[in-house]
Amino acid sequence: MELHENELELTRTALKSSEGSTMLLDGGSGKKVLVPAKLSSFLRPSIDIDIIMRHSEALNAFAGITEDRMIDRSKYVSVDGKLSSELITYYSPFPVYRSNGYKDMDVFTERSGIGPVPITNEVFSSSIEVDLRYSGIKISVPEIAFVIATSINPLVFTETRARSVFIALFSQLQVFDPEDVAKRTAHYLSQSIPVVEDQVRLAVSGFNVRAMHVTKEQNYKRYGEMLRRKIPNKLDMLKPKIKKIMSKVDVMPQKVEYGMQAFRDMLERLK
Image: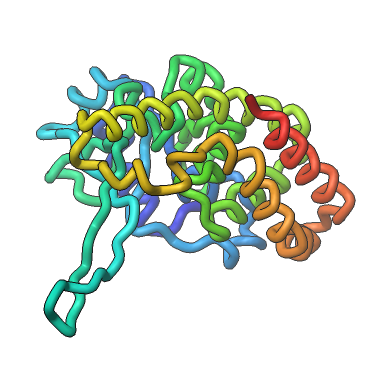
C-alpha cells in the first residue's frame, strides 16, 4: 500500500534531509507500507510521521532538533471551591526529538527509545527495505517484531494501534512466520520491563518530578503483570475483527487464530 499524500511528502523530506544516514520509517506510516491497498480503509491517514535514527545522525540531519515531551494522557479534574474543572496533562517520562523546521515529524533515537522499548543497534541491523513502486522511493522500516512491541505494550495499547500492526503482520505471511515474530517480539518487550521499572523508581525517589503520575498509574506500576495478563485478553477480544478484515484478502481464519495464539502464549511466558 502506498502512503497518503501528506505522509509521502513528509517521508520524502525526511529522506532528503537524512541522506547518507540510516533512517527507518515507523509508526502508522511504517505499518502502512506493508499492507495491501485493498485494506487501506482499515488504516487511518497519519498527520505526521515517526522516524528512527542514530542520535548523532539525527542532530546533523535536522537543524534545531531538541528533546521534547510526549503526552501520556489528559483528563479534567475538579477545582476546589469551584463548580468547574480544568484540563490536566500528564507527560510521558520517555522523550521524543523534534525540530521547529520539521513540525510534523517525531524523531526517536537510541537515547529516547520508543516509549519503553529501547532502540539498539539490532533495530537498525534487522530493518527491512520496502519499495514504494508508484512513489518511486525506497524506505526502510523496523522489523515487524519491534513494531509490534512498540504498539501493544500497556503504555500505548489502543485497539486501533494493535489492529493495524496485526493487519500488517498477517498481510505478509509469505514473509513472516507469526510464531517466529512472536518470539522476537518477546525479546523486545522483555527489554522494556526494566526500563519501566527504572522510571517508577526514579519517580518514587523524587528524581523525576515531571512524571510523578507514574507512581500511581497501574500500567507503569504493574507493567510486567499487565503485559502477561491484560494484553493477552485484549488481543483475544481483537481477534474476531482481525479475522474478518484479513478474510478480505483471502487469509484463512485458522492462520489468524494460530498467529494470535502464538502471541498470547508468548506474552504469558514473559519474564
